[in-house]
Amino acid sequence: MKLITLNFVTCALKSCKSSPASFPLHPRDATLEVIETDLNLAFLKNILPRLEWNELCVITAELGLPPLPSSPPTREDLVVKPEGEVAEGAEAEEEASQTAKDLHRVLLETTVKEGKLVCGNCGHEYKVMEGVPNFLLPGHLV
Amino acid sequence: MLPTPSTSHVCFDRVYEPAEDSFLLLDTLSSNSEAAFLQNRFSNAQTTPPLVLEVGVGSGVVLAFTAANAERIFGREDILTIGTDINSFACQAAAQTIRTAITEYGHGKTVSLDVVNGDLASCLRPRSVDVFIFNPPYVPADLPDFARHEKYNILPDGQKKTTFEQDSYLLELSYAGGEDGMVVTNRMLDQIPEILSRGRGVAYVLLCAQNRPEAVKQRIRQWGPGWFTETVGSSGKQAGWEKLQIVRIWKEQA
View 1 (cartoon, one colour):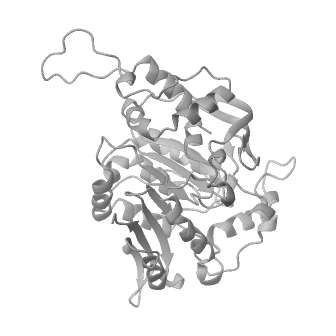
View 2 (cartoon, rainbow over the protein chains, first blue to last red; view 1 turned 90 degrees about the vertical axis):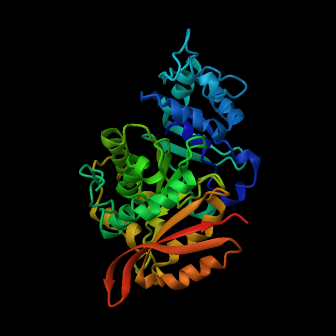
């Protein structure tokens, strides 16, 4: 499970949805695996407004990953400024900055292989097995 | 014709095999009229990438097709896809189908989140889904006994293979829809207003003739002001009745 997925999921219990504590789910006893993929700069720039930055910082801290910048990066932060003069009308190929590379590594390449995701509201633990989180609730909770 | 994703690695003894319903979804989503509708909503490259959720991915053929043909369907390549299935074996199979399709002919631009094991869309954050796709278990047949789910959703202790009873149960999940074939679909329809994003959310749901699609559409229109639904794809005409149809559900801004 990619860490970016945690930006979009929450506790499956209906009664938890309205509680702010049910997001984000907290990884626990996690075995991480880095799976390299191509960096997509246009995607990273466009996804920024959809990221819950403070919650992402919480997750990376809980996983003991290198800290993310405390405030969310801007689109400009993700691109290396071109050196020297760019010829008029020339469409320069944009280069990903270190910030973009770090963000790509955390969001899209860092995955939870085994472990648990814990709801901060009800405490329910969802297992992650072979990279697949299991959000099915036992019968008595549905 | 856009290529159909490969599902040759999938074991169809316990995961639903792509069939007429799956192909109707592919044809509808990539039709000129639906592509025009979706591009009008999503093609602006300055907006955030739309999140596409498919519930009950099965082999993953529909979500893989959508991901790999994002440019043709949405007018942009940077879309996000996430899938859910109640069958953990389907989750593993679909993840591979999607990975392969994106690498082979999707230019690697679409970002596939994960395929998660879950009940319908219960684990998605409210108001987060821009495009929702559902090919439900729509056959009027008794629902399987969910008490067996936990046991049948994993490989038997110490075994490398599933049992015959287990496979039958897992396949039943993919097609049996209870009374009128609508029990699971009705539960899902109830969640749709909660999960769709405000302003641009749109849902595609497949129905068969026994589901009484006209009555279903009538109920959706009664959700409240602004809700619309119409049939945007169909197949298998029999004596004037469409055997299968895709309904699009969306809300217009007031």
